[in-house]
Amino acid sequence: MHAVMRHLRAHALFHSTMMAPVMMAPVAIMLIFSFFNLRAPPDAARMAGAVTLGVVNEDEGLTFPPLKISSRMIAAIEQNLPFGMAKFADIEAARDGLELGDVSAVLRFPVAFSEQVAGDGPVVISFINAEHLTMIEAQMGGQMPMIVQAAFSVAVGVIRDALANGRLPDGAMPVRLAWKLCI
Image (cartoon, rainbow, N blue to C red; front, top):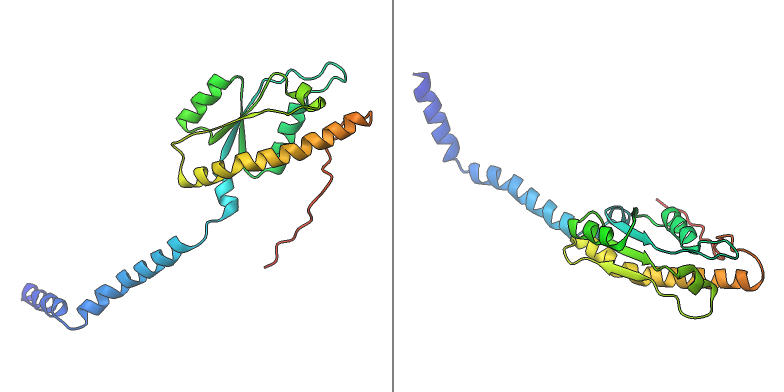
């Protein structure tokens, strides 16, 4: 008797006029939430945290004054940029890390980097991106070469100015940004 009653209740429930709206409401809510969630702008801080920059430092430094400018620039990158960093002994190891997806891009300082900075000619560094990046890594990696070039151009100018005036560069930035997050 109870089995027959349960069958009749289930039959009445599935054939009632309220069944379609009851089943459609959660689906509609999920679709609306997904639409707005996927259309939201990405969080830049979270995106940057997903990026790891590989660094190869082949710079031999200056003999007089005894200074390895690339090491100071690497320290500044670690302190001031929001993404992670992985140091590699040579370019082959860095390329392997790039191919394995351990790093998003590789920045390479050449052997004569400090000499180039102390001189008056152009300073050349290498930047390597991978093609198998996630969307976030590709966006950050696409912007990174321009950011690095601009930042290093300023840094080289400051270092050359300090050396021309007979003092060692202290690494202080000539412009500092004070900002607040308003809620």
